[in-house]
Length: 242
Image (tube, rainbow, N blue to C red; front, top):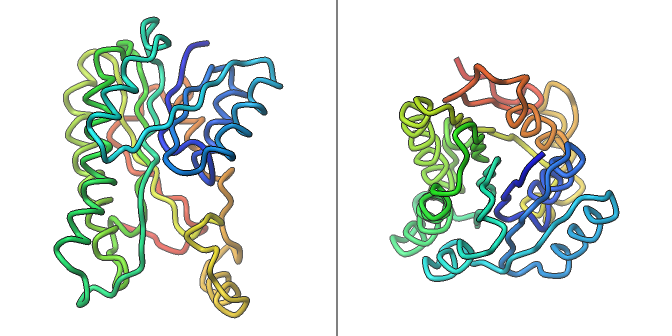
């Protein structure tokens, strides 16, 4: 069917997205920064399905590494799907946030996503689909993750702005905004904290990476051919924006 690029595709939501897109028929390029073993396991699983995959070591904060990634020969045949999923999140109370912490998070989450898109946009087909992994926090804010929330809010507005322009040539840009998802961000939760999270979600469970991957798959398919500039919240009813 074509080629998909998934940043941060070696674990968590990114791994689930990589595997789902492979099941949908795409060859997958996935980037990782520190999780080389898990990234290679994803590649092996995709190849076992009969599709091809490659894991690229790329720090999405580093413009030089992003530029190097953009020279990979797979890009020469064009890119069908771009999933901007990489990111950083460290819990810091809003009143204790330093300017350096804010700059770091914005650099990785927002500027890094822009740089990846800017590097590969020349390879995107006219009907390419760009899916940005945002967050409910980018809309509602977070007292212990103000920098993360700000970076996701910037991503959301940038994505909507991009959708207004690239739609003229047939490209679509959409944002997926997860709520609580069972990834490394929640790995440090105590049993009590986990139960508390579940208790405040109307569907009474934490989301899975696969829940997010299925929505990405929908946005990458022709079933969403008239959807662009949208923010799709996937949170079990935890947050219901107007």
